[in-house]
Image 1 (cartoon, rainbow, N blue to C red):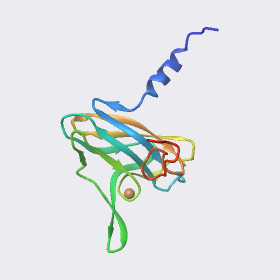
Image 2 (cartoon, rainbow, N blue to C red):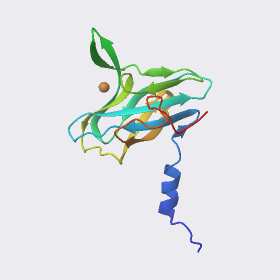
Image 3 (cartoon, protein in one colour):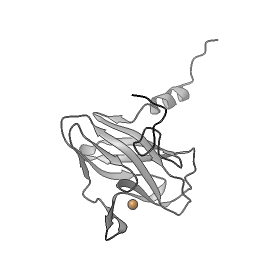
Length: 156
Ligand SMILES: [Cu+2]
């Protein structure tokens, strides 16, 4: 049985292609469940496959009152985090990992709960006006392919 796809489905399929802007690629984007009014997080790996440095400048989302790029660090035995107001540069051929205990997106004042199994839409704003829309998979544990998890099912 052959049927033509309605235009809406075709548009959805195009939107579902991996986030890509020129040489920038986002991998393993995920978030943790959180309640409305609380702060949410965003983790991912951003790869710069180009020949020039790229700077992640800011984050936009409709899901929270405000979204910021943060860096966690230990100071005197206490985990603190600070805003990266000047952005974070990704070297050519390099990548940055946003992960627990390091860089992360902070979604301040969630307007709605983030529930496991849902997607949370955020937009990464880079220098030179480049933007990448990213869907964070809301889940309790990091994605399988992230280095934080044991990878028992793949053999190299
Ligand atoms: Cu934070």
